Length: 216
Image 1: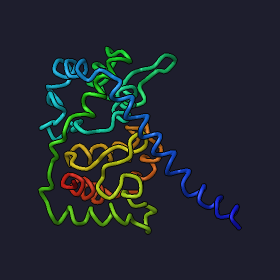
Image 2: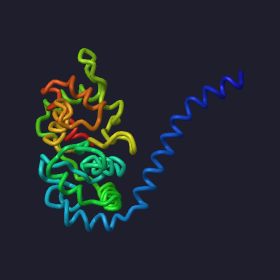
Image 3: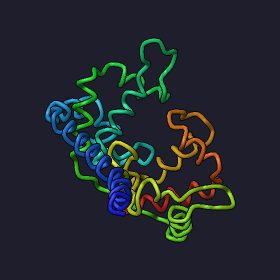
């Protein structure tokens, strides 16, 4: 009986401990990078579109401040055309030109810098639309096979370092554009998000984007 109880406890604790270790490794990597060098790069390369501290005031450009280090690092790598590939995993003409000139150290340093900045979140401007988005975010849509967004990104949209990005406080325009890109296949670097977004209606996309803009 004791052995069986130990096995049950182990099965319960192992995923929690594994996730904790992964998060600690991600955080240590971020702080091992040189955020000061990242700040200098941000001022010279990124400030025009994303602001010097990553709090973009342009609705079509994402807020990078406070985003997870690992997510930022992955996205910058996706914008590059890697050896043996004919195109980038995430296609964007502007970001291709910028990311192509970044070394792996540059990417590490930029990711560390932006992840350490405090987000100045966006806001919802249409409360009724945001309320509709809240329903989809928290409960999904069984009729369309859409799971709740909170099951991966958390109730406050903070995500999980190394697994899921922070999506709360993001510009509604950018979030809607991203979901539509997943839906039509023009952003093809995440199969899970492509599958889920393909089931969302345009109305649900706009509602989710509005809700997330005001979520903190």
